[in-house]
Length: 197
Image (cartoon, rainbow, N blue to C red; front, side, top):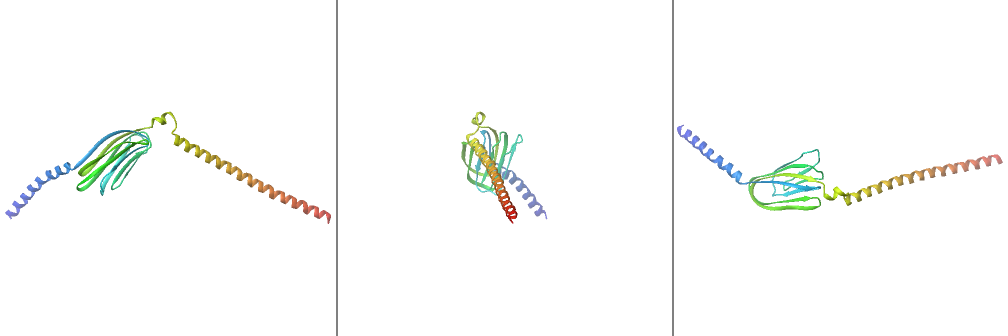
């Protein structure tokens, strides 16, 4: 009985000695990245990592704008077309430390602003991003030519639909007048033939 108590005490002492070590190992295999970006719209941040079953993310805007954060076992993509300030957090965890290359790319407007490939031996990855977006300088002065062309095409299509509807109405009226004319001629011939008899 005494021997059992001594073994239980030794087990507890051994367990308490292992807990800080395990905690220190977890911290040693943690990668954190904090970045701030000023981007033009449309803005996008893409990160690619080794396959994980434990991944999560959140994206919050300061105002009432729309942003998207799509996460998967191997990739996370944040993107928005609105101007605002966004707080983005991406977390990826593994059951044991693994060797991998974390790759990320940053897109500002129509350009690739930057990115990097980071070799890691990690158990967890946390990316904390503060992304501020603004309109491209070209949009502040003039309308984006592609958007202007799309607007013109939409206007042309709408005009074509209106003209097409008018043509259909005129054709329908023309058919009615033709039928009415035929009926009048038949009635006239019928009346004339009745008078002769």
